[in-house]
Image 1: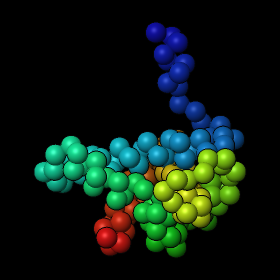
Image 2: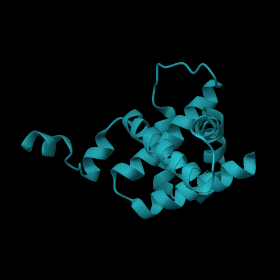
Image 3: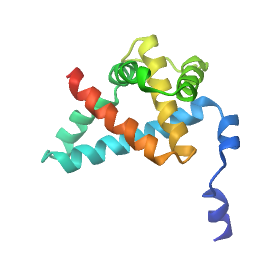
Image 4: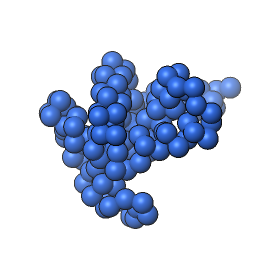
Length: 140
């Protein structure tokens, strides 16, 4: 039981700041995907396959890059710095269904989501997630 507690311990903000922005993006990808799945599951009556197809519209790199561009003016200076760090982090993974620039901005978006989650900024995270859905819907 003690080992589980160690693995699930909360890290403090200083530790989060020392992590690679790719770690933030890794976590942010999962947080955003879960948020979108929950949103679609509770606001539609789609079957699982259709839910998956619909969720792709929100989570693909192009959509995330567009969402970030819409959100950017609303971000604080600190959040813009997080986005910059995540966007500029060297990632040796080449996207197969997106332009490199879209992939960089989607990584930055996921980095912001992950950073807010890891630093326990729940209210701001919720605000940005809600705005992201609104912006994604506008783009359809």
